[in-house]
Length: 78
Image (tube, helix red, strand yellow):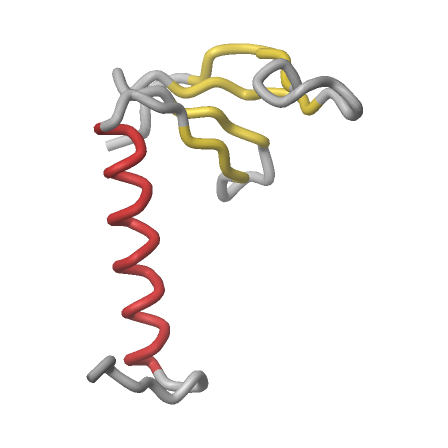
């Protein structure tokens, strides 16, 4: 029987965060890039090798060709 969560609970929030982290890691482990908006509001593409790039979306372009790299982002601060 599946676990049932109250959507307004911290337990639900924790489960969503854990599932998101797991999916993020599995995608990178499969060698695929992950796209997201970072804490500074930048559109980011992260690759399996750990490199991160600021990107710009290209509306109307075909999937896989619908972004351009603006710059490589520096490593995370310690």
